[in-house]
Image (cartoon, rainbow, N blue to C red):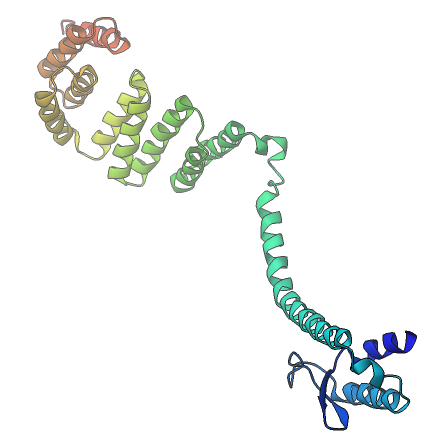
Length: 278
């Protein structure tokens, strides 16, 4: 039994070819040329097998089907070991890079601390950075921070403020279309915020588009005369253009359409100011 076990161990890298008066030993199919095997080592193994065969230790076992099966199993095991080694060598750098990327993605910035894991706080940090850039006269950098804050989807109130501030930054670098769109987005999120209307009118004024915007608003109100927000904006645009009578008419429509709204309260105050003598 021990001699058979020894012969199996020696014959694992080889395959038997029976024929004629003896047995020949050839490389298994998995051991193709240039696959990393050492021919000198195989020669030594083959010589040992021939020695054992001469001593009568191997030949009896070769006639058993179980031994042939064991040789093919050895081939399969050897093929699997070579294949896994190749895959491992190729995948190691790839897995290392993926692991490094995952580590970098999961590691919070050093300055964020525990606040990094709170989405709203993180948006606040970007908002605060944007305000500092804006105060330092760097609107382009401020826009980048405002956009980062918006991507984190903070509360609707904060998002509206961010869009409003970003509108002014766009206006400073004369990106008029982006400025107008940002101001309009702020109003759509908080239609009762007077400061947002003022920002939109200010952007129109800076872009020298107040008259064009007023004409566009008239067209919209012709199609939808019940839009109190539109009338309010039109009144502010007329004020900016110094069309006092038209502004009064627009504010009166706001009061008629939504007498209890916040915009109606503001419109009444504007009417009082516009109707004062002198």
